[in-house]
Image (cartoon, rainbow, N blue to C red; front, side, top):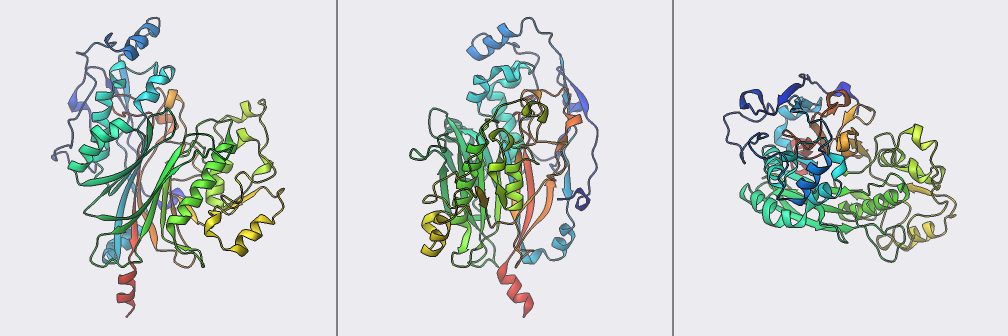
Length: 464
């Protein structure tokens, strides 16, 4: 989406001293400074031991950091701003016909993954890596958005059950959660406001399939079908929200693409309103895709088509710099189907949902085609052509790998419209910013957007 549709101003970043001074810290402009924060506001404390020896993780960090110069200041980034689209003005004039949806998407960095990958966080202050601090800062940042829907990735099951779920319930949210298979303790969850939304259906999607070789990793996704709670809502005013966390490995683009193919098929099953015609409810798709914006995987989502046997596995996600990719050996993607056609067809639909004629068509295709398609017209909330936007700064490497997509249909282009988005930082703004820190409790930045869902019942009323 072109930046010309947005109106914004960007303040400059400041330095943040380790001697915490609350007068120097300001928060997002949309949060009333007189309003009580849902959780205490925290800053780095110089009173606590920098490397507490009582915890294995921190003592290991201290031992490894003895020979490294210590920096007593952190960069404090400017407040993030909301940018409005041109549809915002129309929404103000016709808000009675719409239901407003505020959604947050956030990879919160599982504590177990942080501790398993300590080398990525050697430049961070040790206090900022402690879970009790990170938890409070995450809750503060997320809850003050006051969003209708919150999609989180890398949520550990015991943190969900004992900390996040109880706290979100206090603020009027219910939720669904899926832990990924295997030994890892994290997964995906979706929180939603029970006074605003009615959960009509959901689907947990573990990507691991023991009988399908390429789906041998334990990533996962969650899909929910919601109905607005609104006086003018009809049975047709449903919308689908899906969140996922695809495999990280830059060298296994074949697995990422297969995971996405399967996930889109499950989204299709829950979001399809009329299977014979292929009509579907509006869709919001978000998560950590571990893929750069111009890579074949993201372009497949936006363009609805990919001929994948022209790529090597390392090319699919665009995570590896071209100067390195050119010198790397990587297997090409296969010239036949990624997933069995009896499981998911090449148009990203579950085979069991297709009628016999449709399935026969796919079964008789030449296996050398190596083509995937889907019928969802997706747009990105953030400009996929802006290579300077940043959504993660893990290990001090700034990339854009997190996304919010939303659907539009040719026969109803104004059914779901983007009103505004929460601006991202640019690469030059995050230089020498080490995350997690006093300001951001994850190594990812939170994504947020506001949409307007046009209600069917009001359409009929205003046409009469």
